Amino acid sequence: MTTLFRLDASILPPTSSSRALADLVEAEWLSTHPTSDVVRRDLSADPIPATAWADAVTSNFTPAADHTDGQRAARALAAELADEMIDADALLFAVPLYNYGVSQHFKTWFDVAYTDPRIDPQGTALRGKPATLVTVLGGNYAPGTPKEGWDHSTAWLRRVLEDVWGLDLRVVERPFTLVGVNPALDAFADVAADLKQTAETHAVRSGREIAGLAASAAS
Ligand SMILES: Cc1cc2nc3c(=O)[nH]c(=O)nc-3n(C[C@H](O)[C@H](O)[C@H](O)COP(=O)(O)O)c2cc1C
Image (tube, rainbow, N blue to C red):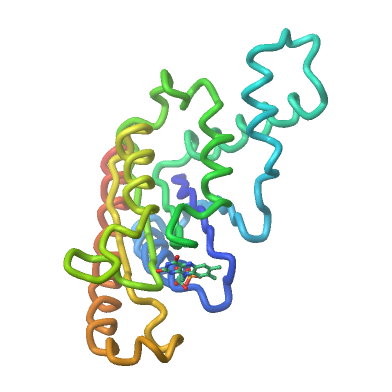
């Protein structure tokens, strides 16, 4: 039996564009692996406590016998987060842009997971694992746009997932999700529709790819 690990970071699940795209990836996964488990980590419903990261880090400078309850809990949480990924055959992350930067829920989750020795700076347990990152942006920060360079999330996400953890990563990006929501962006309806269509095509393709890679690895 295969397992897909899926993380969602949208704080507005009922209207979430990142969830809709991740659903397409998941559906493709399940069409290849119909009996697969999907292990879900919903950071909106169940955020990682903000104190966990410092507790996990400082526990490394304290003898185990002297760990506080908070440090013990943080180490156990880090192991649980790492286990969810290490035990999965493929990984799916759906992460919006908030305030021009990385979702704080995702950053806290990453920081805590990254204290686990199996996936810390020396750890290699995730290398080569098939993965998809879905990232959605309310605006559009493409080259030539007025706010080019203001998306300080996507490059960091790519850096830590692809270069630090060594995932075999596909990135599905949908800009302009606020077109149709914010009337100031009404002039961009056509381009936003094209971008949505392209993102959906990429989501389906990437779901098929990670499903195929996991199937080959299992056979
Ligand atoms: C609190 C908040 C802050 C946001 N900040 C930005 C931003 O800085 N830049 C941007 O392009 N979109 C921003 N957005 C828009 C979201 O990126 C956009 O609505 C996205 O689709 C949210 O993801 P979701 O649809 O999966 O919930 C923000 C949205 C919220 C709710």
